[in-house]
Length: 140
Image 1 (cartoon, rainbow, N blue to C red):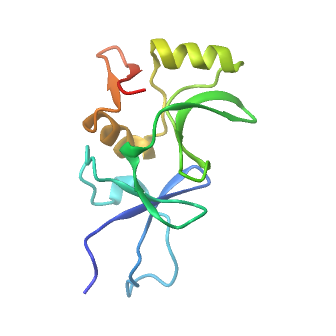
Image 2: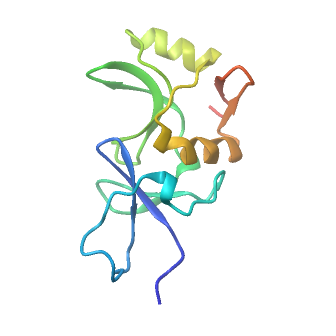
């Protein structure tokens, strides 16, 4: 009998549901738009699969940090192995500007498919969002 436990993985910037047990409708893992997934929004138990080790971890267990890509510096999360997990801000031109935004708050910016992750971070007390859309880290 299939498990009800949902595991997620980030591949090419998209959240992907992965299953440890085979499902008869799928021959391979399939990318789903989050709008059609049966998610519990704000679920602090939202789990992801580490890209390198394959082990699962809770989204709320990963701290908010300044990350870097070819596009610039941004506020987000990394998987335990260091791979990008989320991007919660726009891009900053320097590490110093991104660090200041992380310390003082920033305009929340995220892809629509990451909304369940954002809501899990808020429900888990990792992230706070003001009525004006300003995000702040609640736990260093």
